[in-house]
Length: 463
Image (cartoon, rainbow, N blue to C red; front, side, top):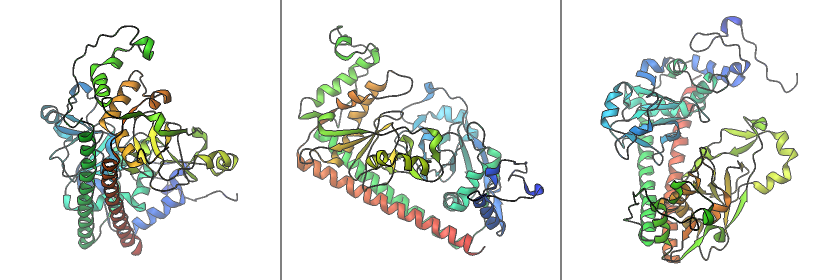
């Protein structure tokens, strides 16, 4: 029995937080039992007692209702611990929103991812908009006392709150969070002084994030201004006449969308100035797909496309087993992440770039390419990363990968991506703005950890 984790539970105690019998052994892992014991020593309230409602969002809303500006519709892809990623969000009209008024949320309400790869992620809705709505795969929580919202968020991000979420995930074919479980999550009653401190810290963090976003936006604006795309409006014409020689024989593509005028115009505009193809600027290394049979809760961090965006890496959902790592030590060591490598996604959310700030003993999935700048005297990694995340490259990604149901960007197409080359002084100015932006984000992460430590110390210290 050595190495096995065993918990003995009375039959009378083999029930979930909703009062139902649970027979799955994972539900009684020691970390969950210890977590439950700590919470039982405190006076707590259920989340549903602290909320106006806990419900799932709009069911089966057609993309025909999506618009460019309006009420944000929060989907699972936008929920990033602990904030909303507005870089991918979509909008609905006031009319659609009011037609679904039972799911309207306000700033300082909470949203949970209740299904999918990042099940259990949680975010606090910011003050960017006066109202929000959300999709069917999201659980929305309308908080009664919004002054307490920041504390609730931090509690669920702490080990004590996160373990409640992990424990309640159904172990069916596809994991999911049941609304009834979320309603029954226990939140300790803590002193008002702590709630106020957490609110102040999170407000400070929000302001720092806004400063960071402002610097990043300034860098983007400087880039577009330098390459003449600051006032660019994509063509909306749906017709573009091409000969067979200039279409299929040249590109091997017959899908009409590939030849939309908006793609051709932007490339033509950039090619009027110094530019280079991406394959001439970087070395490209592919990673591996080890297979889900070697996934684990501990071990070597395994970073997938959903584990990062242009602003940073999140804690990965998957790890690789020690036995797999030992058997493939030489291969994996060559794939460890190195400082100033640009991670670039070719599958799923194609065209997302992130510049690593330090070496990491972790590997990525095969859907992520590792780009290494060949000549930093010609192009700076920070500048190149910004270009890869820009409208210019996203249009090229949309054109190339748009012909398939599951987005896939072929490496030979990625090598041909057009990159504008601006003078080095402009590159340095852009790079400095990016560095300052990321320094502020690092400061915001420290504030988040400080808040979590305060909550855990308060609750565990009195247990």
